[in-house]
Image (tube, rainbow, N blue to C red):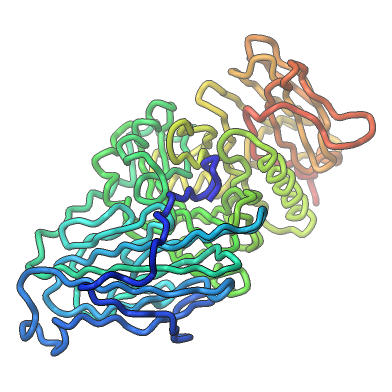
Length: 543
């Protein structure tokens, strides 16, 4: 929704010139809606659309062996009427392809008032039950038409047989103007014999790797299978060019791209399957899904459905990650809380104020976990790249994993053994040493309460940067790097003074200064982030 690559882009939908179709195509007025019976959040189900050729319902009787039939459906939605509108389509025997196109009007609205915007997708004869098996595709607002057949499907949709039964075209009117929204949907069924089944090439779940090592990867990327402009081949090439070892495919609300990645993975690049789950109360990343698995998005925070789908992801070995929690666009800000999150995205694309706010919230959550004895939530950073000029790998995660495999990478991210880099040019190590012991990122160092502990950061690749050490008391140390961007910073503390320490490496301010907190105690002023670590923890012995 956001135009900076953080959220779902919207393609312009052609203006709706008329809601009354032109003969000789059959027209059905769907202004009268049937309430109830639909899945998930507030929904409406329209009266079903039938095709005359399938009237007697038999596998051969009355069904043409070739040709096509079209139905046009028009209607009007008032503001706030529904999150989803389901149009049942009675598909007879003998159909080899279903094609759907749609349009809606965009009346002028007062400044500051949302105008019309409507998504589209489809479920097959297996039904629209929340989390069910009927899902066949979703393109959001990025396409005005799609096709599904056994041998192929429009990106974002799953190829396969068009079996007889009740299919459902789904409209998602996520913004409706005060005047309402007039829509028109065209459904075309083409009869004939199915073509050969489409081949799906899922990526392997392991690449060559270097054994236990630090691996770099971008876990939030889009292709033409949702609202991205890049083909899978281009995204994979971008990951390699960025010096990444792994990447995660996270197209919005669909698993359609999973079957395309096999030919682009290799011994040098692990491609992990996932999904960006785009709800009405925030977006989240389902990372490490079994190839081909889909996660439903049709709910709000008040529906109490999110924990169910978080459990689904974990059962498959994946992790649950709220995305761009402060993105300002409609339905993008995170409202589900963090009880069911395994990590959270705090840096998305080029550094902005949204990210500054997200890091602050994440830091507060670390303190809350320590006070309550709960589990802390690791931070992640990803590009959310959709198209040029958005850069794959800006930023990305550097994860300590036992191997370059989906399972090992998910384990490393879940444990917080990771840090976030602006690019592969940035390198660092971050450790705590004391009482003849050492701990690294995401680990705990147990020492006597007043034993000295040296916090050390070694960094390269941030010319004239500023290093910050932050604890549960706030920033406790700041030091500048030289023009060559390399240096080592050491600060001494104790477990009695700091429960955790995390590091930030910042670029200079626009005026070239390193940045600092002002004397009035207002917000700290620093340049854009170059690197951000997850914390290491200090525990006083006997506590």
